[in-house]
Each structure stands twice: as structure tokens, then as C-alpha cells.
Length: 453
Image (spheres, rainbow, N blue to C red):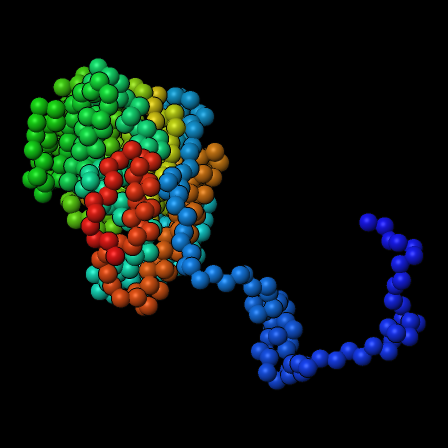
């Protein structure tokens, strides 16, 4: 708006303006009463102190984290090499198995896969938690986990809920559920047969009904998995790490389903202990055994889902690469159903497109040599070639960093919570609300009304 030329303005030479005294009944502040950082104007590092920064409005209502019904970290790697990559792996420049010497570098963190300093911080936090009583640690982890109450889902099985979440995100099971069609699947040792439970439950929810036929490779301790007409159970001493058992199981599945199954779902803890520590130590050998089975029983176009804990060493990345080479797409998923302080993640491999016979035989040979003491596994294929594939390595690096950062944040929160809060086995109202919002979105049964604060 323009000034009015006729408007009277005060000026420095205006007597009325100059003679007006500025007075206040409030004395000026004393520097001695102000915090040191405000008196000095800046902190030691030259930045404004927190007292100088503008404060946010004070709220009397405690903030609650927003509910993310997707509740995951997801990293997708599309196979751009074509079906010939699996065949190329058999050539001399790709194939490698360290049987003559032990190269420990294959089992150490590589900076191209994850920041070693970040993993060292995680290790230190785990050591701190390991010195605390287990029931207190469990209570703290439950309290800081926004989505912990999904375990109260009426399916009453964390493995079933996990597969339900993965199925919502990537449809490894629903993809094959069509009215009047038989869905063939293999469940490799899921705890309390939860994967089989979910697949059969989901089939019953479909309009028109979907028939299923399953084969369950049970752990040696499993005695709660009754066989039925639509589910065959395989349980032999030695478990899945015994090469003879692998051959017998593959023969059983192929004898019943010559064309191969639609989907293979695998859990890593086959003894039912549920211990993260024991699972992480044995993840290589379990994944090798599971992949060797999956690649022999899947049909062309089938899907493989398995659990792993890290991919920060050349050996773990090489194992992922061998599996990735056989499928059109690989997705690394960190689900909210996982324990927040673990490094657990699931890998979903969609649409088998390559001839997997060499990869499967290579993995089975490695497993056999490991069992006989002839091989301490360090590499499976050329790490030089795998690490040079930026299209594969970069998403693996991003997933490792994101999951590790989330894990470290949760570990620190658990330590802080344990030191400040009493232990409790109850869930908060917000945890129940978060769980029910997710379960509704995932099309899973709601939580049971119990264990609420």
C-alpha cells in the first residue's frame, strides 16, 4: 500500500518525538542470572546453543508415533542379467569354493556392504543387553516396539503373522491362489509350522475355495505337526543340514508333484529355540541347505521366501547373489513383525526363470564338504565379480545400512528404557491400536483383547 504524502510522520528532528522519554518499570536482566551459553552468545563449537534456538510450542499431550500400516523397509532388486546368468556362474572365472585354504576375509564385514563402525556399535549394545536379566530385556524390547502387539493376532503364531505381512506386501502366496486351482507349497521348518498354518488359513478365506497341498520339513524336535491329507510331514534325525535328508525330502516332494511346487517358504531356526544368537551364527549353513532344496523342488515361475540376518560379509552377499541369479526379482524386507533389536530380514524371490541345477548342486556340494569337515566356508563365487555388479551391490548396501541403523536405535532405546522404567508384560493402548490398524490393512484377524495396560 503506497504512503500518504499528507500523513504526518515522526522524524529525528521532531521535538515531540525527541523529547518523549522511554521508561519501563521492569529492570533490565542481569547477565549474572543468565545461562552461560546465552551470556557467551555461542557455544564452544561456534553454533547457537539449544537455549538460543527457537523452542517448539509446549504440548501437554504426549506425542505418539504415527501408525504406518505398511510397517516395513523394502528394497527390490530386479534381475537385469537374464536367465543365462545362472549358467555363467558355472564358468571358471565365476565359480569358486575355498577348499584349499581358509580366507577369513569372506566372513568379515566388507565396507562395500555396510559400515563396520555401525556394526561395531550394534555389537557393543548387544553386549550391554547380554549382561542384563533376560526377562527385563524382553520386557524393554516389547515396550519400545510400536507393533509388538501384532503377536496377539488371533492366528496365534508369529511365523503365520510374518508370512501374512509379507503376503500383503509382495503376494508370494496370494499370487498362486486361484479358485479351482491346487496350490502346492513347501514349508522348511517354520516354528510351530506357522507358514503352513497361514497358507491353509488364507486358502480357506478365498471365495470359491482354494485347495492346497503341502510338504513340511520339520525339525527333529517337532512333535506337534500332525500330518493330514493335504500336508505331508518329513522329520528325520539330523534335520535339514544332513545331505541325505535333503535328498530324501526332494524325492518325496518330486514324487508327489513332478512339475514342482509354486512356493517354498523357509525359516532359519529349525530347532524351535527361537534364539536370535544361535540363528545368526548358523545362518549361512541353514540358508545354503534351504536354497539347495528350494531350487530343486520349485517349478518354473515359482517363489522362494527365506529368512536371513545379515548380508554384510562377502560370503553372505555371494549366497544372496547365487539365489538372485535364478529369479526375476529379489526383495529384501524388514518387517515390523520382527523383533526390533534383531537384524532379522526376509528375502522374497519371485518367479524362478533360470535353470537352477548348477546353483543347487554347487550349494549342496558346499554343504556336504562343510559337514565332513573338508571345508570352512569363505566364498561361494568370485567376490571380485559379485562386488563389481553395482545393480546388485548398491541395494544390498542400502538395505544393510537402513536395517542396521534401525537396529542400533532400538538397542539404545531398550537400554535406556530398562534403566528408567519398571518391567511390564502388558501392551499399551497405542500398541494395540497400531497392531489392529496393521492387521486390518493386511487382512489378518484382529488382536485378542488381553494383556493391555
